[in-house]
Length: 586
Ligand SMILES: [Mn+2]
Image (cartoon, rainbow, N blue to C red; front, side, top):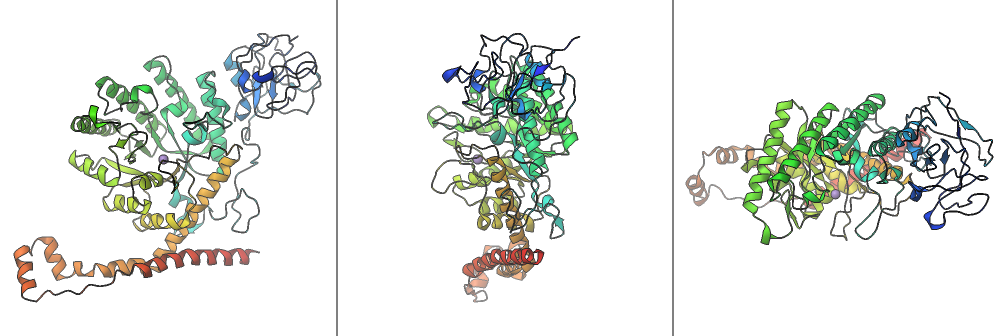
């Protein structure tokens, strides 16, 4: 079969409307054309736009507009392409061999050519296999290095040094960092007042879902590799939108999950946890498990079954349930008792299925007090702990705690971590912080060593993560438009966690906090305390000893300020040690 060779010509960026024969074209529809007599490119608003007035030997042209790449279906003059510049590990083959969107996906690797509008520009080899490693984030040219505190490169880790040993364990193994696919790759930067602002070309709803999913995964795995972290997390709907029927939806999910499995095998990246999105679709507006309609409960159950099995297939280490719609908007239409029974039944069914399929990971519930609903049943650690114990589920579930959700519930994150550990429910962390002036979930990247050091202290002193880790369930600010903003955000957040880990380790090695806490409770390991706890000293015995003057205690200091000084001095000491190391290295 004779293949038509693609003609590659560099094209202007978005808004470059040099047009055909030098005449601007497209106007506000945003078409970008260039080259004498030919259309070769278009901006993102032009997907599906029918091109006219072309003399079209434009077959299989693929164009780098500076914002990504476009491909045009040969012969049809229809822009079918996407910004495909983000495709990673894409094999270039059959360029010009078809006119479908599938051609578009398979037809592009990383294309590069001279900055030329010359017709005789470079051609795209028809059958050349090439591997692309840096297609969507070309401004970040390799893996983020460790540079130390004095590094001048803004994209170098100052503190996070994966192999550095802290209390005998690698930093990477303490922190178990994960990147989330939803906010970082599946969220367009929209808010309730405005549409998306981000450059996420695979989110164009007109794209074939498989092409979109693969372009998204290309970018995500490129990001993971360059960031140099071990884990990622995703919801079913982040990678596979709903198709025409439940069966087609399942098929698409299975296809994409297989694709993810291959990428994991190639890259060595691992799945920290999977989860099902039971909150975006309109059917879930009144809840999933707690919906007044049992048919919606059934759809949610099918979705969790599929995603739990997908997580197992990918070797996921945990499975998370976030009940974002499991709550109410008004009590006027809500039967609290009934919804609690439904919710308990749902969680029991998920646990039963976990055991049936032999999934070895932890099931994790994520507390959040409100937003999107007025009130959510998974309010905080204490509420979930009571719920699990009431419904005989305490052995089946642990918790995925988020900093911002803790603060929305009126707690410090330190409190929620310590509560989960005390209740035997600690599982994993979403590291997003909130904004102290805003009353909603801003999901910002962590940046306070002072706050996170206390949480890390609790985590490390209790033995650290088992299968959990620190997931960046974080959002860029809506004005953070550059592609590399995603790197700056994660690098800073990871350094903050790494620094907090060093402070926690210093506090543990110093031992003052532990010693003072132990001393404070010393009485409970003595005769009196033990006899109370074992039941050997009931009320009348205690009363008798108090009335006899045998028990006559004096209050003692809680030493709070002293303890706060211990923490601050550990933070400062880690600074001093790092400075000394940096100076020694110079
Ligand atoms: Mn959040």
